Amino acid sequence: MKKMLLAISLVCFFAAFGFGFVGQSFTQQDFPSAEESQVFTDNDRLNLERAIEQENWETAIFYCEKSRRRFRAEVNALEAKIKNLAELLMQFNNPNITARVNTQLKELDVVLKKTVELTRKDDKMLQDLKRIAMEKKSLSGEKA
Image (cartoon, rainbow, N blue to C red):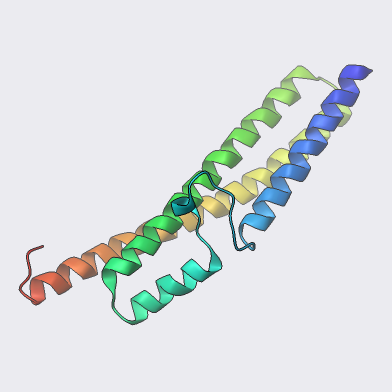
């Protein structure tokens, strides 16, 4: 009985923490991170858009790389949560827990796929920005 309560508590904790963390990470100003340079805020997104509009390619590349690091960190965190939930599922072969964990795994997988797609878009934007910066340098006669 204690194991079952512990399993349910862990599943609820992972679900609450996981979805709270993922949901807030897209909306809150300060994304929790070990280093400030890893933080990508809404303000950074605006700075990226302004840099592109003003054709300030070095600044745009900086903010794009910062965004990319953030999304990669989120993908890694979500993958770890999915693995933890899968391990819980294997340890406790209870139909109720299995159903709950399967639901959580499906929801986390959807979020993970969205995050991966955003990372791909940022990767493409970064490649485009670097290409534009190189073209601009070569047109202005600077060394590439």
